[in-house]
Length: 353
Image 1 (tube, rainbow, N blue to C red):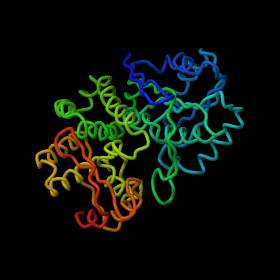
Image 2: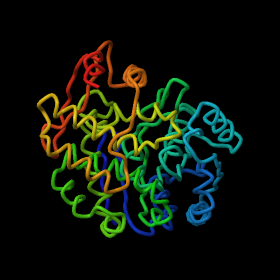
Image 3: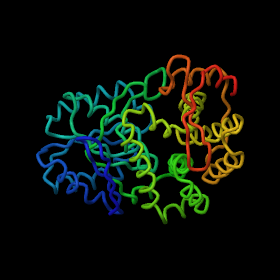
Image 4: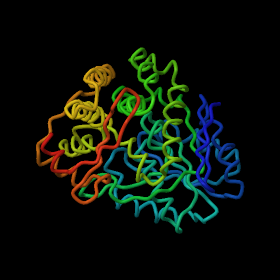
């Protein structure tokens, strides 16, 4: 088993990575929740038929009573109506403050269940069992939980760190290729912003098959990078902003597709390429790096570019949580494996676009 500790004052937790770990989830949960009686499991309609039974068996063997709540798969479930539904279901299941919520699924399930855990009974413990590549390398670590509003994604949320993150690479075998590719956008991001050697590794392993041969090391590297950033800046006010490379414009592309045409990973991939190109235009990013990023995202079946109107750019930039007043912080690369914060006026960014 590969393990990492996210060291936050009074809220340390482990990230555990091992093939077959889902079968040991009950034992792992019992170690961090010695006094819990009930676990409220949140999953979705895609994951439940695949892995709900295996998880329930493991939790029962460890002495937990479980209640399972299944939400429809898809971004549409990350909404206020589903959150209220979860609150009521948790109360109906008899959840107490000594119990915990378990998220079994991808980023939507993790965000929704985590926000419910952060707010029910003024906060209960929370365990992440991510089942997509994107959620394993990114959204399950760091404590950001949220739901979407009509105005945009992740606009209502909280920082609520999990007690434990359990990653079983075997669950990735059931992912459709496009969902796997979505996760690779975030994997590529880590190489761009923090580890040039890792990006070169990805260039040498530019297929799903080759990545899966080294998947535990890939997960460990990505989570280690994110762990270090989160420890330095838990609340996303400084250094943690580098994790948003590709996301400022990626959110505009998601908006352009009305959150249906383009997945998050596709939008982030195109956003990374465009932000690298902006960096080239500003004289900060080496031109060859922008080309390499474009070639790498394309190798994993992700788009290099997505069309977006000036109005859609303006709407997304106006909602960006890295903005303050008339200014925004864009994440740019000044060399391979190193990102920088580049504050600028929103109007200037829109002009450049």
